[in-house]
Amino acid sequence: MKITLEKDVMENNDRAAEFNRQLFQKTGTLVINIMSSPGSGKTTILEKTAAALSDQFRIAVIEGDIATERDADRVRRAGVRAVQIATEGECHLDPRMIAKVLPEIDLDHTDILFIENVGNLVCPSEFDLGQNHRIVVLSTPEGNDKIPKYPLMFHVTELALINKIDLIPYVSFDMNKAREDLHAINPSSRIMPVSAKNGEGFDAWLDWVKKAYRDCLKQ
Image (cartoon, rainbow, N blue to C red):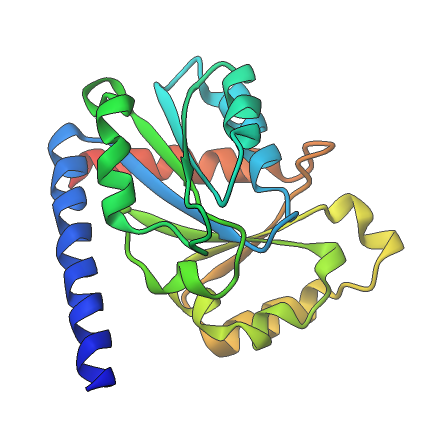
């Protein structure tokens, strides 16, 4: 009976995700679901990305947290629209939460929608939100054990941003080992080293977003 219940829950989730996906396709909006553990630098990456791309694209952000609007306020100060979802204890966003706030986004006037998921390397990986792309942020102070310890997250994502590479001289992180572990779990994924603090590697990330948008328009 438990297996049946879990199956029904995920089937309902997939239907809700497909509803969102159809809406995103209709409006030509690129949607990127960004996941990570807490403190990896997701919000800082979004702040810098918004500042770099807002003159070329109409950008909006959905922020997911258990409580507060602090991350949404930070992104708003970067000059883009942001809506906060307070999950009040839920460890992930689901497609119904996203659908509920979409009227506040105005997809007809949004080129790129970033969804910053709740900080958690487990639950968010299980829930399709209807996005075009799922990526994960891993920061160098977290060490090399996160990829093999949380395989589903790295299996369902197509890009791993390795943030805080400016700290590599001071922490124990092996980029080659990270690539090896990721390839063993998901050969089609890739690692992109960046520093949201000093901008190192950020041009490659911005180019990835731009290409994703161009590809989205072709669909």
